[in-house]
Length: 492
Image 1 (cartoon, helix red, strand yellow):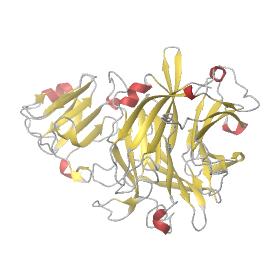
Image 2: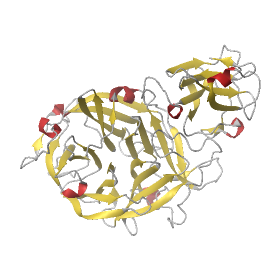
Image 3: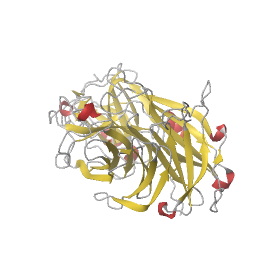
């Protein structure tokens, strides 16, 4: 069965990814699970080797892998339920803008030990309800293991199906092929030095015998991106990889998005590096794209340098201790064919200046494509970005149609830990007959509200120069007809 999710224009959505994301935090559920300061810089050696390394989304859950090499070593899978957000489709937006405190329903629901010896769990991937996780320790070997996620509160390792390797494995990506077979890619850029020579970066490609992950995989090919000067664009220290399919008419294309932080070792406050995503178009062997299952050759083939063609790159704004793409990043395609990126910080850290004091929290960022559809027809797909300054500059408050309750009092609304009460420009996409209204008083009152009228297409407007002062106290979506009839309404 073909269960692939397709985008109609991968390059366009990738190019429109917001470079400033929405903050997501979870701090409930840790107390009963962690008896110490693991997964924080307060643990042994300031958290060295004890950190998060992979992230994926299922419905309204985030799955995060962690590495714990200290006393009672273990590779972990942590499952977080965002009870305040929708299952699918669509982006979630920030869960801390209403009262600056994550809802109690946003919590850690499972702290699962994957392996007690191979303690480094890398960037995982998903195949249906199965997590595919690369595992390493300090040696040269690795294993790809499978975790059953049919019950997210009680993950279970699938035994007897591990792919055992004589080389490292830091990142996995998996996708179904037209035949239903699974293509599994395993990336390593940290193989041990032999005979004074650094092992080349390489992507190992496996094909499954049948559609299921438990039917066995065979190594089918290798890709060695050239390291010469200049190096191949794929020759990078990737910390996450995800396959994305595109369908336009009868044509199908496969893409791969890679994530990294440019800091050589690990981002630090004084050396934050740049968080980047890279888009590649993938040229698979023709026989792999047949609708009939493909049998790999007896020995793995070496793929040409044209296997991965670089298309585009995005650099995201610095995230402080909210995320970095050296820790974890993934690409998610919802059932509305919308591209969304998630990234998490290396460690749990305090939400400073907010309710809850110094209690550690998982911190993550969501980046969404702003050009995922030409015309928005449903209120569930509507979105509004309010910027403090003209020209879409300064802090930003994002409101998403299906998920966000109306803002009744902006004095309680926080962006980057500070109140958000003034707008200098807006960018929005709202269905025809709908509007987003900014009121001068609390509880959606006051004369002279600013009405952002929906046309279905994306629009940007600078607020200065209108009769609206820019300061507002409440806002919400409503019908365009009722918004237009408000006393003194200013319609843009």
